[in-house]
Length: 432
Image: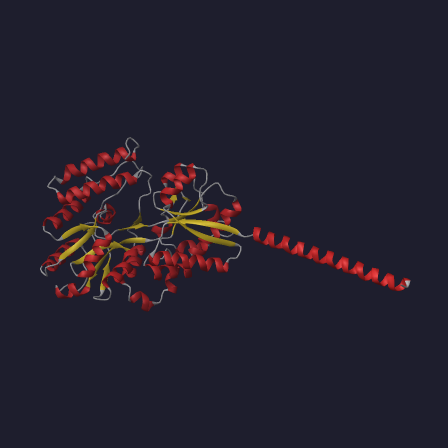
């Protein structure tokens, strides 16, 4: 073979070898780039409590929306009772990064488990002044302790009443009651129809707004005492006892009360924002379902209480992961997402700015949402007490409430005993 031909073949072979090396290098670089890209995605597990139904479906839809538009941060839902299980995870040294917990966040603060969100709220990726002011006041202060935000509420629900409009018409009631005296009068008219006028939940949280509307104070400024044995307490408990003694009201669980309303056995039931859609579903279109807020008490005005879960970021995770969790929280609380949340769940949005994305025609057909928004706009709406020992107080209040309505025990000593027990819980001298 001529030398020139041999050299040409060697050159081609060398080029081929070099090409294969280049290809391998490119493949290697591509694989490395792919791994790097995979590493740049921050995965977040959200511990939350909504399992099944329209609420769970709405949460899932929102998470899917976020993941589709935020490829660098991916959120997965872990349905669990985060308010209780997260405490165990903290003790085990494996707390979740992001969780939805109830208003009793004092135990988490006591465990030094929650990240102070102020640095995110006020940071470069935080809320503007306009965005902060868009939050309803009782929502904004819900998870705030000593000027520090540890929890941002996302499931806003307030106390309200749902009623069968057909029964109201038959009883000659033109509009919902605006005072407790008018409520009593309307219940008497409804009783004449042969139905149970009012069904109330067997939980004291539903009597606290009435207590405050009568001028009551749930807890002292220093957080160690209650004042149920007061003019407001006596008026509230005596009023409810009167309704039960006159067979104008019954106790029940939420699902049972909704079933009784849907069947026409009960004319009015109490509930929260989140219950309106459930009531509509139960009624099945057999009658129009109305809604109204807490009537005014002896104070001259109504009062209401905001309840619901809120997002927290747990300590023990790198700052980059905390920032990724914050990006999800901020997105979730944005007006468009809050409007979607409200319209698909019945929960009220947490900001006024969400209302512009909720069509007036939809709002007009959902009086439950109207009642919720009116309550959140009111200066007399307060957030649920988040003192770490107030859960024990409410358990004692549950018992006192039940005894007041179902026994002949005098009201005054009953409330005095309640205040004594509450002080023991709040001062740490006793616990359940």
